[in-house]
Image (cartoon, rainbow over all chains, first blue to last red):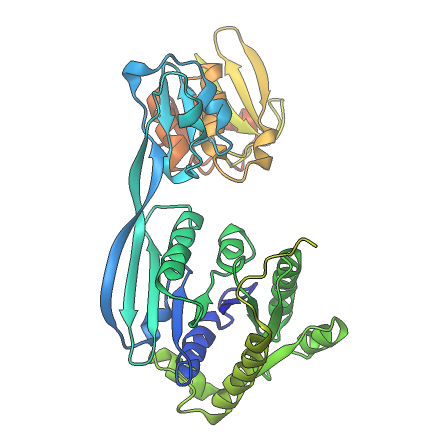
Amino acid sequence: MKIAIASGKGGTGKTTLSTNLASYLAETNKVVLTDLDVEEPNSGLFLKSELIYSEDKYKMIPQWKESDCTLCGICQEACNYHAVIQIMDSIMVFPELCHSCYACSELCPTNALPMIPKKMGELKHYKTEQFHFVEARLSIGEEQAVPLIKQTLKYIDSNYGNDYLKIYDSPPGTSCPVIEATKEADFVILITEPTPFGLNDVILAIETMQELHKDFGIVINRYGIGNNDIVNYCHNNNIPILAKIPNDKEIAILYSKGELLYNSIPAVKAELEKIAQYISALSANYLPTQIPKNN
Amino acid sequence: MKIAFTTKGSQWDSKMDPRFGRTEYFLIYDETADTLTAVNNKDTENEAHGAGPKAAQRLAEQKAKILITGNGPGGNAATVLQKLGVDCYINAGDMSVKEAYEAFKAGQLKKL
């Protein structure tokens, strides 16, 4: 089963929940946690782990072969991202803008834009005492998170079967990287804080998940600050609230030391147990692949 | 010599646009012919990515050798402008086009 932990707003507790939930569930399940927030992965800060494997990740980009080019202009017409443009008598390629779609390369009548690999980031595979942890990190200067997220998901799928609970710490926001990180998930946990900012941004995330036809639930973090609007919103829209993690100075202190919370704070453990129960009930109904039958 | 301004309008008293890639217009002043030509750049508003290189390419067609703007172009656009041999002058984002031109002539704008 695949569970993505996302949020609209940044800084609402995705990583805190991901690391604590992964660790808690690993006491009774086989778990792999993946940090898909490739622009700023930070789950690893909270885990004591040993590196067992790492690899460089590449994306394919076009490289201009001046000698074969007739300057016909087809490549720049084909590129929706202006990653390939003609300036006077030369073709300029902007690798960071390239989405590796191959259109310019395939459509070039003289094969003057062959695709070559370019390093975009790294994947690292760690082992903690209870579970496995995979982190992907985009190289500095790279703009496209989606290709690296895609390759990381592929790595997880080829290394872990359906007997694993796969937890994905997703990027913040509601744009392409979040879509990529959540689109294969069986269930999405949206974590928010009970403030006007938190509500505004989680509504955007809720609408995104509805558009993707995802099954999802809400976890309220720092419960006790702000107001009750998020609770009312969920009640009025029949959205399940899975847990309410209290606002507690002790949590902030442990977080600042890079430590997990639930062993020291019983209230957090109780809330994690509620989430575990919910997931367990879901997984009982969950079938890995449902192929529609033709009557 | 042709001078390009990033602007919000097509007149000498129009406001400058501090942005490069997503500027509303390029206003081209041909000093020799004493003519002012506006090039609409508003369609870059719809570009999620690559507005800078696209705007730089549009500017290339105008054959301007000087660019007067506000914040200055980003990395990708700067690469194109360098290739074109366009000199960039910045920090004119809060001026009118006329004020920006006068400041340029008086040597008061910062060259990138």
